[in-house]
Image (cartoon, rainbow, N blue to C red):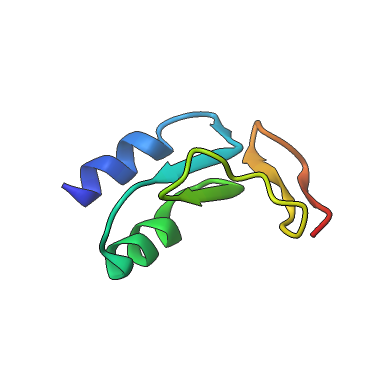
Length: 67
């Protein structure tokens, strides 16, 4: 279920990036709001973009920079 996936994804001391693959935009928005991650990649394995802020949460950083 979505709840189990979010719980498993958030069950870590790190939170630099998370990746979400779905064809359902409503699901993507709903799940991404619940993920404890500094960056989220949607339908891609790459979240690096010069126009986007870079950084993480938890033990993965001290906030965001750039963007």
